[in-house]
Image (cartoon, rainbow, N blue to C red; front, side, top):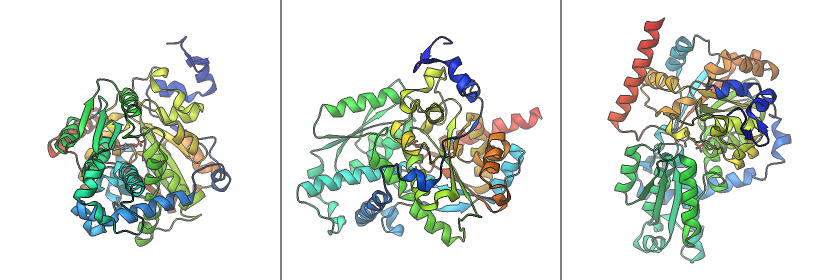
Length: 459
Ligand SMILES: *Cc1c(COP(=O)(O)O)cnc(C)c1O
């Protein structure tokens, strides 16, 4: 391992350049502040995606809303717009101060993407958007649909029969497959979901029950995506949803930002220079959290501070951003196993597209141990009665890590935020959970309880 060359340097040489790598390789929790973080107005000029692209995605989702409301009746109360609430979680904030033995200044909120309709995770944003965009393009090319139509006409034999001549492929650790699979099958497409070893059984079962073809691998996500890409390259009527490079997924996620701004206004949360907002986003390959962060930066500019959260055993985005090597490296190159209970985050190689797009916009990244995820999972149920899947808790530990960690305190100081922290807001992005079967959730809860009991016995 010591003599292994990673992009021209040994691990030791990488550690000399980036001392934090030592801790990352030992799978200790870290918080890294991005030295390339720059002012928004300067940075955004160099990014090819623009606000207009996000607005275009927002309009497309509006066009599809009558169809969504018709085929997914649970979205009728929001008129076919798939959106989640944002809530203050003061009881959780108090309990976290006990668990981490750290005061959290400002107010903690939770963005409840665990409650998103149709697929119960953040993937109901980007994943569904990309399938809808593809369906719209196919139908328009065949003169079956134009933008002024009421899209509820898509719920018909004619459209399903048309889409059944086409297929869609995707690779997933679970949730992206759920979202792409459910939406594509509803439209009438043939769907192939290539699942990595991390994917939970119930997710595969659910997809098969909807007529989706699930292909399983003993390997991790990197293998599944190679195979999915290969399959679709052989079939001109097959569309590949490319989680590592897709701007469509990214833009679908980014739409969340405008909606969040409206939601915050409704609960009298105004973000400005004296009321900064910190957002903590669980990160796998980067598309979901990256798209959301991009949208949020467009809306809140320098008044928002975005952090990616990753498991200590698969900190791929952190390593990619820190070294600037992005998708040229994977965690195994550094001797990290990539094995984590946070199945949604079990990704070894980050998206190069996302890393490069956001390299001057992200404030930093931090890592969380799996045990903490379970402790927080149990505490969230006890304090707020909100059930999240383990991956979704990675964002929740963010504020505690920010205040506890020296790098975090320096970030606050260096950005002249110290005297504003009492007025700050912290949003943990809860990325999934509502589709987890009850017995599985109970086993997660017990796991958290055991860890907490053991911890208090040790003290
Ligand atoms: C997919 C997922 C993420 C991360 O999204 P990426 O686009 O892979 O970075 C976070 N949490 C959950 C629950 C997910 O399913």
